[in-house]
Every structure is written in C-alpha cells, then in structure tokens.
Amino acid sequence: STAIVWFRRDLRLHDHPPLVRALAAHARVVPVFVLDPAIVRGRFASGARTAFMLDCLRELDADLRERGSGLVVREGRPERELPALAREIGAAAVHWASDATPYAIARDRRVRSALAAAQPAVAAVPGPGNFVADVGRPRTRAGGPYTVFTPFHRAWQQLERRTVHRTPAVLPPLPAGLRRGALPSLAALGLTDELSPTARAVEPGERAARRAAERWLDGHLGDYARDHDRLAGGTSALSPYLHHGCLSARECEQRAVRRGGEGAEAFVRQLAWRDFYAHVLLHHPEDVRREHQERMRALRWERDDELLAAWQDGRTGFPLVDAGMRQLRASGWMHNRARLVTGSFLTKDLQLDWRAGEAWFMRWLLDGDVASNNGNWQWIASVGVDPAPAFRRILNPALQQRRHDPDGAYVRRWVPELARVPDALLTEPWLMSEQQQRAAGCRIGADYPAPIVDHAHERRRALERYRAAGSES
Ligand code: FAD
Image (cartoon, rainbow, N blue to C red):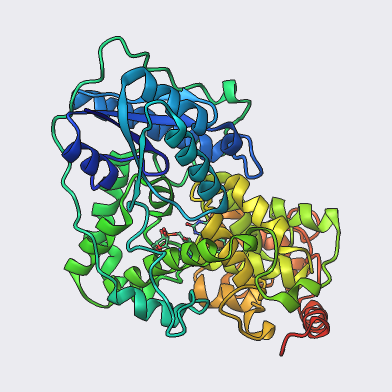
C-alpha cells in the first residue's frame, strides 16, 4: 500500500515520527509539502521566514532524492491538494505531525474530513513530532490545562518520552510518472527577503542545523546556566531550526540530557517553555487575538505611529533597545534578553499595544512562531498566563544593558554610531558632554537620536494604566 507523509514544520529526515510510522505500515511512501497561501500570504506573512523555509525545503528534497525518494510539492489549500494527490497515487493514509496553533488545528480538521469523504476514504494519521513531549497531555490536579509554567514544568518532566528515531538510509522510490511539482521562487510568491545577506543569523537546512546543534552541545551548553542572559552570545541560536523542524526538539532534549550538568538542565527547561506556550495556545486558542487575562482587556493602549516607527527602526535613543531592533531586521533573530527589553519598552515606555510588537516580530523573525511569540509578548506585556504584577516586568534599558552587555560588545555591533562611546557612557549616551560627544564622533540628536521618552516618567504612567485596568501593581 501507499502512504503520504505530509511535511509541515518538520523539515528534516532525522527523528521524523510520521515518516517512520508510514514506512513501518506501507510499502510506498510519498513525501509531500503543500504550500498554503493562507500561511505564506496570511496575517503573519514574512519574506525572510518564507525564504528560509524554501531553502530548507530545497535541501529536504535533495536529501530525499539522495535516499532514492524526493519531495512532491503542491500549492493550494491542503484540504484540496491532499485528497487529490491521494487519489492520484492510490494512497491509503496521510501521516503528519500535529500542531497547536488555531489555524493548524482548523486546517487539520478540514483535511481530516476531506480525506474521510474521499472515495475510497483515506486514513488521517496525526501524531507527535514537533515538541519534546505531548503538549496536550499535562493536566492540573483539577483536570484543567496549566496556565503557570513552574507546575507545568514539573508535570512535563514526568511525561513519557517517545523514542528518538534513526534516519532510514534508503527510502522507497516515488511512483513512476508522478508530477513532482516545483518549489516556487520567493518573488513568484510576491515576497522579498529583506534581511541583510551578510548578517543573517543562521544558515537554512537540516545539515546546517545539525552542525550548529553539535557545536552548541559540545561547546557552550555547559556554560548556559551562567551565560544565557549574555547579549553577545550565550545561547544556542537554534530557534529557527526548532521552529521549522530542521531539528527535532525531542532529539535536542535527549542529547542535552545525555551531556548532563547545570547548563543542560537550564537548556532543557527552555525547551519546556516552548512546549508550555504550545500547551497554552492549544487550550486557549482565543489568546492569539486578545489578552489571556480578562481584566487586562480593558487596558488602554496609546496610538502613535511615529513612536512605533522609531521602535521598529531602532531609533529610540536607548542603545540596548536600538541594538535589539536592528539585530532583528538585519539578522532575522534577536537574543531573548533583547526581546524582553524591546517588548517591555514598547508596552511600558511607549505605552503601545503589544499586538503591534507581536506582528512586527512575526514579520522578521526566522523563528517567528505563533505560540511562542504570542505567549512571550503577553508575558512581557503582563497580560498573559503566568501573571505577575506589572511593575515586575518593566525593564530599565540602561540597567539591563549594564548587567547583560557590560563591555558593550552587543550594542557596539548593532549600533555602530556608538562604537567609540566609552563604556561608562554607553548605557546613557545622552549624558555625554559636548566634548565627550566630539571625542566619540557621535553627536546626540544628529548621529544618534536623543531618547524619545523619559523612562522614569513612562514607568509611572504605565503603572497607572495597569492599575486602572485592575492589575495589582
Ligand atoms: P536558547 O536560549 O538557546 O533556548 C533553546 C530553545 O528553547 C530555543 O531555541 C527555543 O526553541 C526555546 N525557548 C527558549 N526560550 C523560550 C521562551 N521564552 N519561550 C519559548 N521557547 C523558548 N521564540 C520562538 O521560538 N519564536 C518566537 O516567535 C519568539 N518570540 C518571542 C517574543 C518575545 C517578546 C520574547 C520575549 C521571546 C520570544 N521567543 C520566541 C522566545 C525566545 O526569545 C527565543 O526562543 C530565543 O531567544 C531563541 O534563541 P535561542 O535558540 O538561542 O534560545
């Protein structure tokens, strides 16, 4: 019999449960990717991320061919394309790795009913593959889903782990005469990749992903507990690979656990955050549009397109905020600490709606992930699950910079106008005297912006806004 393996955001051959399951049950297996216009051109369209995905798909196709198979490509709605392909090749089943976003769940439901209605009916076989553990499983003692990370993490650690699968070296050939379809160019999709060709954070594809994982596990993993907040380095930068599934989160976990130690433990905890936000969205699909905390839906956000543009362009006059925002637009990635600081700045210094930040991140991030992005934006805006009084999540950009970029390496890399500003003044360059500005070759207000707001003042205003909405702060 024949089965289809539907690749989605699991663009790899190592540890691929749907592929392994299909191979165990069927003589012929046809790998397919359906380019869905609703995602490519939808609410969170991204030229950078789509370009990355297309490159990953090209490599996946080459790797499948090397193993005697190949990637079949279709463009259109999956609920139309998959039954049509199944009919064409006489497939009895479609295997895939299930996901947690509302769009994925609705789409998969449509695919399932279309396959069931096909003549003859085609079996739909969703299963694991995108997360470390089964994110649907953990339940509180009362039987509900978790909304706080620490108890979720405890339950998550106890969950059974699936076996990591080996890559099959040879795959069955594609049916003779089957039209493979070709991957479109980015331009044909009406998108452009706006990232800097030289600053791009990571190279696409499973091979590059495995090399990067190897380097990370053998290198800095051991120091991760100490260094994870260090802005210039310190973390794995594996997130684009995990998002597109060039790496299996489960395999990463297993390999880190084998290494052992404090660093590995802290790293696996971060993988649990990824599972946590998928768990939250699975159970609260309405969070993609609105604040999880009901009373926070009454928060009043300001509207100011000039302030928003200054934030987006990295022209706020706060060096760490600007460094983060410029890193995002040049490289398609931003360090977690910078995401927190820029997120706090947007929502609590500029008083602007977190959804504007969420959308901007989705446009640029190679790891842009509906669940993780939404969950983290709600976290830093103090409106989501895992609540804490708002004042605990108002970050002071200057203090954060002093603490996490003490030698200025991160800020100087992304904000070159400040390269010659002395360390002591780099967190608050507006305090430089005329003479110091001349010596540093950086005139505030001309070469580098003066701060667009006063942090202490905005902090008070933010607390008032949150208090008015009923936060404990
Ligand atoms: P590491 O520190 O090496 O961590 C290893 C892996 O754990 C990451 O690759 C990631 O998969 C996972 N992880 C780590 N921290 C988190 C977290 N807080 N939440 C969820 N997963 C985590 N992450 C995304 O993958 N996609 C997003 O769209 C995204 N948007 C974010 C938006 C905001 C405002 C904030 C504050 C954080 C966001 N994050 C997002 C989480 C986090 O910043 C990134 O996962 C991390 O910076 C990726 O870098 P890394 O691979 O070096 O992480």
